[in-house]
Image (cartoon, rainbow, N blue to C red; front, side):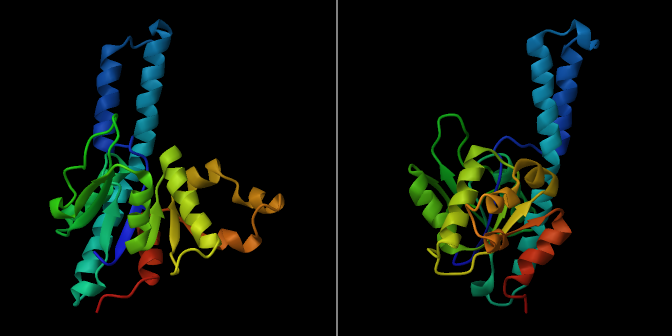
Length: 232
C-alpha cells in the first residue's frame, strides 16, 4: 500500500443501468401527464433524473479504475504497483473499488463513520478497508500514500478534499509532486471559473497548473500513467 491512486467523487451516484431503472420505476408509479403530478412527485422525478445524468461518471470511474488496475498489475515488481484508493462509501467511491475488483486487483477503502451513509462498500479489499472517526486522520492517509488524485463530480465533501489538496500543493506542504486530475469537463467548467481566481488576484496564474481537466477514461488513463512509473 505504498503507492495509491486516489479517486474522489459523489456518494450519490449510481451505475447508469440502476439509475435508469430507478427512474423508470418512479415514472410508472406517478401520473404520465406532468400536469397531473404533485409538486413532490415532480421534484422526486427531477432528483432521479439528476442521478441518471451523474451516472455516466460512475460508469467511467469503473472503467478508469479497471484500466489503471490492469496497468498496475502488469508491473513486475509489486513495490512499483499502484492500488486504487477510495473513500470506501457508495457512489463514485464504490465505482473506484468496483473497477479494481473487476480487474482482479486489490483496492484500498478509507471510510468515515457517518450516520447517513453505509459502511465500506462490498468491492473494497477487506484487509485494506478502514473506517475513520475523524476526517483529519482520513485525509492524512489519503494524501500520504497518493501518487495521483482523480476528482470526479461531487458535492461539498469532494470540494473539501479537492481544495485542501490544492492548498497543500500550492503552499509547498506536500513533500512530493502530486498530480491532480479533475474528471469531467462539462461538470468542472460549468461549476468553477478558475480564471476568475486569477482575475481577482487571489491565486497566481501558475496555480491553475496544479491540476488538469480530463474528459474520458482514455484521456485520463494516458494522463495519469504518464506521470507514474511505467509497467516493465
